[in-house]
Length: 423
Image (tube, rainbow, N blue to C red):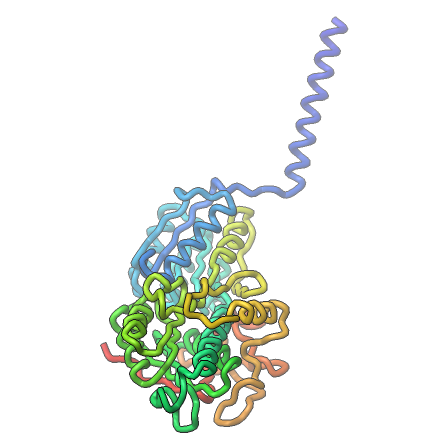
């Protein structure tokens, strides 16, 4: 009988011990459960387009980092920027997604519409700018500080220009079309639309190149499309025929680099700086590098919030300091010493000693600007509403003070824009 009582007492002690341990685990607040997560993704294109592939890679990396299985992600590919986006979002909501993401700026109004219908589901419009003003607590925006990697890619371009000048390849006598009347070297840029996102990027690229070679002018050719291989190739060819030596891009296909590669192989002195992905496959000789994003940094953060039942930031932006932006591998045609220069510039961006939009390094109408009212809070008339210059720095994509999406839309001296191509 005594033995039985002892056994019962021991069993009770064990039960109490496990009960205490369970309570302690609850007290630690570890309520994460990745198995309850279902993510819906709306893509403007598919993995054949570098921009969308970069998002897909980031989403997969974020899922893996948070223990989310591939079966818990539903993909909606090649969704245009119209009511089809709203239809796709509603379908994902009906399938039980508790986070729905779209990757294109033009999706955002449709995402906002559906977010209002499903207050218990979180909606993220990547690169959008309406979340803060929407009044919807379940609607979010995110963007990287890609202007930083565009600046670095411009430095790569500048190093190549310097090499061409130093070796006597690029001179006014040999290549007169590549210099303007004031002796400035011509470079070019293929842009999709004249949005702040594109203006911010091409200005950063130009300033990066100009930090190495001062005497530069840049011509921007618009295509009126995010991804049109034919138009991008034609724009690049026009820029080279105008004398531009290096062509950057904010357009999503390999059209421009492939066209420049053909010209380069035929003996024209011209090189390419791409976007999103390495362009070395399309332009093994002409491609120098590409400005790119590491979207995995954001998606890892957002999915962790989802798993832990925490709120995702209304606006989110990170850059080199958090490894959220990068350039792709340097091509074989890059100038000697480029990697060392790139490392130096990235270190300065990380420690804050270099600011891309330092107002001391550019002018507008010949003048240095000390304040600028930007259209930070979106409205139908694009009315400027917020001074975004502080301490001589244009505070681009400042998610804590302003918003994540770019609002740098200043046309600085040295850059000209051509009318958007018809069609």
